[in-house]
Length: 91
Image (cartoon, rainbow, N blue to C red; front, side, top):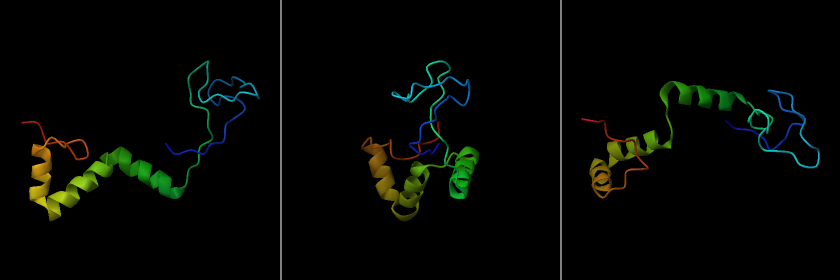
């Protein structure tokens, strides 16, 4: 989730007060991340699509090669270069 670098003075979840000289990244009491959310309309739309369809860079990278250079995608899979692409369906 996108967020700004702004640290909160107290945990939004359990209200633990962070020491002013040492703002923590995570609350030591409950473990919640300490940051102020930055929610723009574009970010909300992006997170919604991600949640519904689980799209990420792999989908677009795979689709681009599959549509325009299908032989290249096959070649890369056979060479073992599979991490940047959507995995093949299990048989």
